[in-house]
Length: 424
Image 1 (cartoon, rainbow, N blue to C red):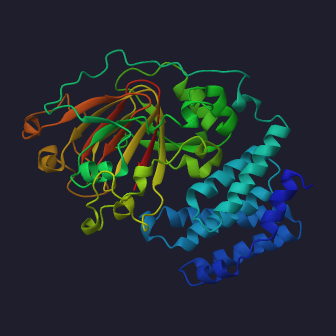
Image 2 (image 1 turned 90 degrees about the vertical axis):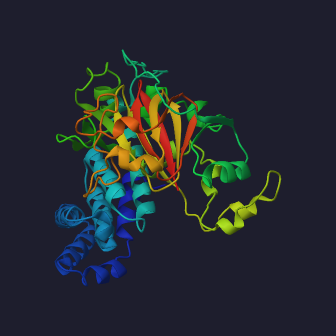
Image 3 (image 1 turned 30 degrees about the horizontal axis):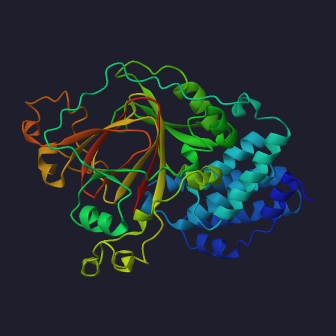
């Protein structure tokens, strides 16, 4: 049986790069990168690890620059593929296992899906090496259960909604969810959806030692600042274990202070072991694109409201301490926000209130309001805001909130909180 490091070398050695190299050579600045990528692969096949890593480093630098030069969607996918391959080759030749795993994690974050399975295998091999050499003792933590300390907010927001409370439903049928919630665009709180999740039962995410053992050594992006609209907002990279120990386990900073938030990250694509702890709700298979086929009644065959063309939902992790904030904004997708650990305050405004919420006029934040704290608004600057109707609630641990497209929402953690959102 091959050892993990040998498996990783074999994976990098067997890459078929010709289609990628051909595409790179057709791009501006791509021919030189294609040459460096080929040189890295050849050096790896020849056992010249230092040379392979040096050439791969050039590709990683060029790929990073290309991917951060403009809007993500406008960058040719070949740059993402090149970054993923270079990460794989670099990691295979790196005898520092922790550093190699960080390189692979960056490849998973920035690369495309073409080489994702190879990167996931590489991550497994490297984690196996870390465990075998006992190099991740600090990340794994002490044996036994180590639950989160809630660190609840000293003065949580009071519910002041001007609209009636949201409908609360226990496991509604697919037809009811489609016809009564999705089609009219009506938010609701769902209960019972998370009851069978391992994250809530046999592998609870309230257990710090479990999270550290499964993913403590993995590198993740962490938002640093009051919120993503703050002028001092920044993003940094650290291991999940470091994030938990530095920013989640200690008592939270005072209100208004800088916070760290693992927000809107596709953690479950990066760490499949955590993906096995959650279950995609069946509601995420529903579509309203063809409303002519969406008239199923309770008890009718449900095929008319289930779209076979719906792609898998985007699944994001949100992990932070008391006071972590997502300012008032709306999404263009259906959103099922599942509260696994802790609770959150949520304020919702219907789409027709948009003009009263003062959206940013241009730029990347046009889906966000200029109003950060709805309980402390300068009426002279935002005179219409006071007339906007809203509903607010506390989303408790184990509950889900359905947020239709276009509904404005502000979300604030009331204590240590771990949420999963499904967008489709």
